[in-house]
Amino acid sequence: MSEHSGQPWESFASLAQLPDDQIDLARAALLIASTEYPGLDVDHQLGVLDALAAGAAYRLGGDREPMSSVNALSE
Image 1 (tube, helix red, strand yellow):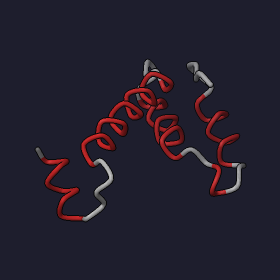
Image 2 (spheres, rainbow, N blue to C red):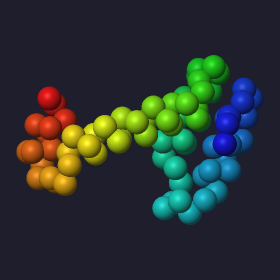
Image 3 (tube, helix red, strand yellow):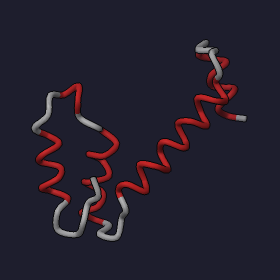
Image 4 (cartoon, rainbow, N blue to C red):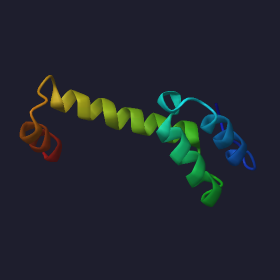
């Protein structure tokens, strides 16, 4: 779903109608941000977030020990 100028609130309202566990919080936050930054490409920024998450998951590996996670992500 690509957001265009003038549509962020409509897109956000549609998203907000979903059950809580189905709401894409990152998309919702970016839609709100796009009201302040009209040139914001929501889909592109979601891709950036996905890439950051993939990098973090790679660095963490299977280790979910809190201190190990902090150390891995701070390197």
